[in-house]
Length: 122
Image 1 (tube, one colour):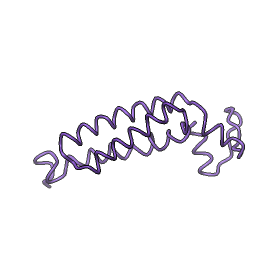
Image 2 (cartoon, rainbow, N blue to C red):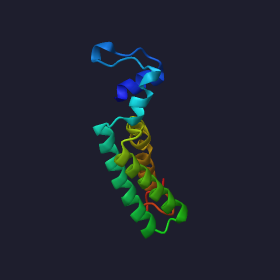
Image 3 (cartoon, rainbow, N blue to C red):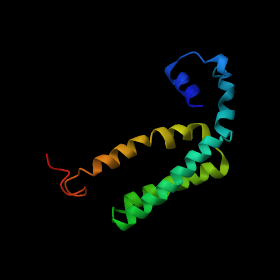
């Protein structure tokens, strides 16, 4: 879970009352190869968003590097969904870390060349 991940990263003791066990190196295999429904859902949303981004990239002619990026990101999501490998980590890499994308999309509206006309003015 997210709270378990944050506790481990921050070095906090695990919350035994919630049923979470402390991290043990033996748990690595179970973390890497365990199916997690919430992670699958995040991967599904991530894949849908990458397909939308790929379409936008092609329509707006953003360049081959962006097309390659969206194809590779989509393939990564499909591979994780199909094999259930890395679900524990996709919660961060395809969920939490993608939060900045929303902020960047909002800020792009104020771009002088590509944003909404008039928003770039003081």
